[in-house]
Length: 131
Image (cartoon, rainbow, N blue to C red; front, side):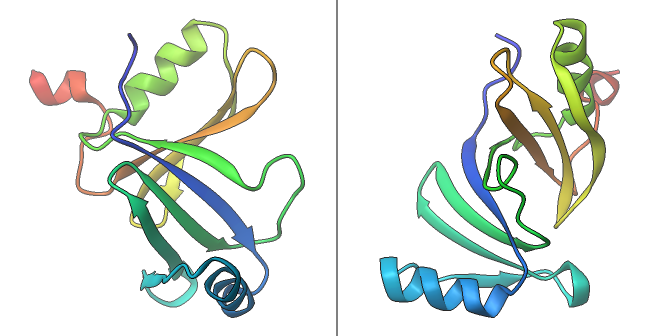
């Protein structure tokens, strides 16, 4: 096993966070908390111990939003992305800044986009952290 995610998060891009918050609250009763600051602000709702929804600013692109994103609670995203590439996965977004952490995206063997996320306070490489 390459990694075991601590949770899955459905990440939506929204051109209007307020509109999206009203819609999901009115339709599904989801209560969001605001996280981040300024342009990095996003909406977050935990639906169960291992499933959440985040709505981040951006233009929704059919086929790429929403994105199922797996959380690496202990870090090591750089190691996982490198291992995915070694196994032939297409890396569509290398490790980069994400709200309150780092993120990356790849395609599974059927071409489905999937994301990875880790908190900002965790090491990018678990292998280096062990040394």
